[in-house]
Amino acid sequence: MVPGAAHPALLALLALLGAVLPGPGGAKTSVQPLNAIILQGGSVKVNCSTSCDQPTKLGIETDLTKKEVGHGKNWKSFELSDVQKDSIPMCYSFCDGSQLAAQMNITVYFLPTADPHLDAPRVLEVGTRWLVNCTLDGLFPASEAEVYLALGDHRPNLTVTYSDDSVLAQAWVMGNVEDEGTHNLKCEVNLGDQSRRSLEDVTVYSFPAPSLTLSEPEVSEGTTVNVECKAQAGAVVTLDGAPAGPSGPRAQLQLNVSAEYNGHSFFCSARLDVAGQVLHKNQTRELRVLYGPRLNERDCLGNWTWQEGSQQTLRCEPWGNPLPELKCNRKKDRASLPIGDLRPVKREMEGTYQCRATSPRGEVTREVVINVIYHQDNLAIIIPVATVFILATVSTAAYIYNYQRKIQKYELQKAQKAQEEAAMKLNTPATPP
Image 1 (cartoon, helix red, strand yellow):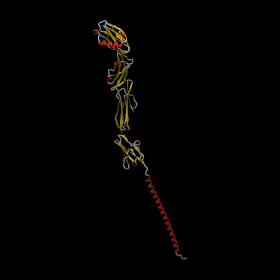
Image 2 (tube, rainbow, N blue to C red; image 1 turned 90 degrees about the vertical axis):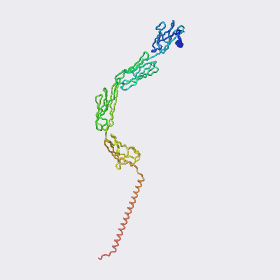
Image 3 (cartoon, one colour; image 1 turned 90 degrees about the horizontal axis):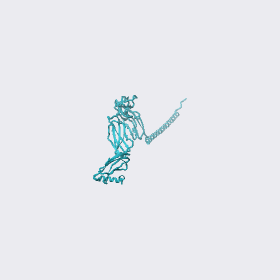
């Protein structure tokens, strides 16, 4: 069997024996290069040589397309072309009847024509950082790829993850004040003698929040307050409530504050255009307004009417800054009015109360009337009514009886007097003529 037709397994065995058992006089077969990494479909030159000092047969065993491109006394050079997959070509020689062999490794790599996908910010604020991803798919062997990432002159530390046919490189890029401006962010992937790269423009900028100031953060009602919002040059600010005017980095507002402004938040927004992106920064400030107590119908209803035994809530809440203290006492006996949950309502709560709200800034009073509707016990009502009726009936009967007796006595006395007068007339002698 000619060497070119030898079975790959047999050739591998022969190469192993040739490497372990040198030929006569220590002769050897050598191959250069021992390892080659080439682009899929590409070619590689292989040099086979021998140290045998006798005329010998020298060649290369491979299933790749081969072509002899040079030779000498003890060497030959071959070009292996259209390499589509990994291969192990073997150089062989015969020296004094012994076969000697040496093998090489060809690793095939490939890239698609696409460039790496670069996931990066278009703008980067000073003092912040961003995780940049650079990904390239469709390369083999991915583990042999080298990745290079840089922002301007800075090369951040990379974390590279490999899979069968892709590579992912990640790095944190920082926004440094000395790097303000636009820079190239470059990601490059190298495999063999092939390279793919992507470029993105990244603008490093500085944009602090606007300054929002109040002439006084705490004032009495009726005081004039000045509000100012200011941002860096190039920014445009908007201040809520400020009169319309030319756009710019400064806006002002002046107002005479009332109690309703207590706790009011003034809002200022700054807008800056960076590399075609509109960025916003905001600022708020709260105003405290001091004013005396308030206690009106909305906060404390003046008249309450409840059913005895019901569940009710009495609301009477003054307001002011500072918050007033509230005390309510019944006018007739100074009893305290229970504020809040009344469970249950009792008739003893009924009455007119004086509520007084006081604070260091003054006091205010309000009258609150509590009415309680309740049902009296029926027996307690019937007995007094019956008693009155009986007494009235007896009194009436006694009056009628006494009145009739008086009439009868009067009539009897009248009749008796008439009889006496008649008798006197009979007993009186007649006057002579």
